[in-house]
Image (cartoon, rainbow, N blue to C red; front, side, top):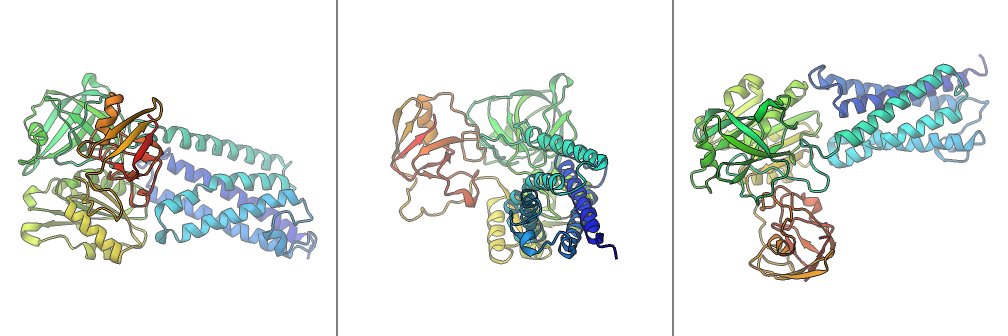
Length: 522
């Protein structure tokens, strides 16, 4: 046997692993930037190809490591493969590969255990693929003997250029604060598709629209189609987004978009008439085709995350933000089911469209004939790691949260509420709704008292009249302010359960202070 055989195998397997890993990263970036798009090929198959390439890369890496251990010429042992800077052969170059091995191990382990991990953990570890690509590329060009080979050099330049372009596009273009994305400074949250919220007149990005069509969608539900004046395109949006609708009276309400994100000519919303509401839905139901309204947004705090399986749970008009999600997931060829409850079949909008789209994957549960939806049964059918999306009245969401916390911690819940959740009693030693404190505006060094009967936002506006806000009920996140000192009492719906301890931000429309003074960056 040729004494150099293992060395040849190590070199060939190392190059194959690097090429496949590079292709995996580039393919993943293509998927995340949506350059391939859900309408050209089924993204489920594209995702399978991404996984196949990564698995093949790991397989060649294992061959590469085994060949290095078997090669008597280079004399590698486990310490050289596992500990940086101990290799007698190009120690610095080999160290890049050792570090890359540990980064890859973290990515592989979190990918294999993803159904049992919080989505955020998996996502942030997965971002390490950027560093992994750089480490492996440097290792390949400094530790190997093929760096001067024109084919290897050309391939490296091509893959590196593709990686840099797609990474830049992904980080700077896809995540910039566009009309269809969540602004990084003040992330807004959608309200409900039923009775919306009064909003302080604060009209950035106001756009005039025409009421193009009004259609009866169910008892008490009006489907409204809005078109841009002058025939121009409306801002892009993604499933889960909502808009602020400025009605003829000046009243502002927030409604979820339920049309097709690919349709840039129109927006569609579904509005439930709430007889005992504050008049917003009643005014929408009095609209006539041809009237001019104003929209703000879109904004999205209910985004659709990538998952292998989806369970959608809707209560009444809460179906509206889920509609475009279901269409997107269906177009992608991914597994999904819908549990849809309502007072009666006649009051449940879009049921015919959903049944035609999903067939037996759609379970319609009218309360007057079938009772309440069986949440436990629906959750039991969902595989580990499934994304559960729910929008509806508070009793439905509260029951779902309790059921999942008790029996289904392996599923990932995403919710959108119609109104603030019941906050329950104050924490021991914490403030009640009647606490008094002071706010210091750091830029002007102004100190103002915040009495128990006024919101922090009201007091701020005494010194900063143009302070940004929208819903003023803790949903949209537009009033976000940086906290420099003090302890906020978070009462908003923007921060998740794991963020309630944050002391660097506050939403002053509803939140207050646990400390005697808050210092804000205003």
